[in-house]
Image (cartoon, helix red, strand yellow):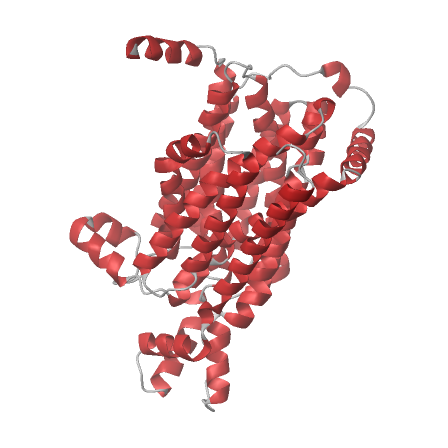
Length: 484
């Protein structure tokens, strides 16, 4: 029986064309390059200049990451139409060229305006890429192979997301190499593009009219989507989940770097796996915040199949509500403790919720879409991600800077205690000088700020958003959902 099942699985794998495997490998390298820099991006923007950071404010970071990433998720609606007209292979080459040049140029800019502009340029490359690779997977799978085909695709996404930061962190001593390594990884896709065969396109349709006419049609379709009030309400509710989810990248690395005592994890690796302690530690006794945050991707790789099997027969909304509340509790708890062991446990809780609800969002949109508009509805599933990124940027920016930013709270402490600090110091030098004048160690100053100003209070904001999204989804299920 087992042998028969194995033969059946092998026969399914043999039904995928070469372009399917090429596209999946391209996706792996693209996600590797993207997360290799993106997981480190928040601390790069706000970190001390003596460690390669730009020392931008948390508010500026929130604008760059929030609005920039939101634009990234909005543009695929337009870039998909361009790819349909001019060809996937050609647009992939342009996307990789934009990606590589943006990564190479990124270390050359440092002001808020220049960094924001460069991130928007990078977002264009990602927006050109996203709809093409998803469409390629869809066009190279059949009704029989689509389930396992997209399973392979999402596995590639998570493998890339896991290994990307692990590689770039090895080069963190010189921050420009974070971008150069990502540029090198993305350029591998130019080689793979030689083996990429254009999947079947409706060339007659793609040649009708101009690009501007295609864009006009897109916005007309968007208008029809907005007339479906129930669907629009669902998308706005789901935006709350994405706002909370993106704190994994926008806020958590900064919070760990500023507040969490990671010595217990460092001591474990130093005693048992010295390579990790040596290469994922900025200073002895401290682990890289991004290495800790990256355990989310590891948990997904290890547990996604099991969680998916557990919730397979659940109704999508029930799975989403469960996932929303579990995610919210997990993310809130990551911002509640200074102990790294609690942080990792909280990331596990968050990951379990993420695995339960994220795939179900797409499944539910497919179920509620009118039969003749399924592709249209699926295409606009970006709306909650777009809105969620804008809200996530505000939370990780203005809200975090007000409640939890160590730099801001140190300045507040200095003002309240009448301490005089010389100008021209880096963020780290400033903090160490405050500790010296207070006649305590930097760690003791960190603990004093924690006890005095309660920076962990931001957990209430994150939990509040998640609970609100869960309650609203429950009310939606009871009043507007017709598929119960």
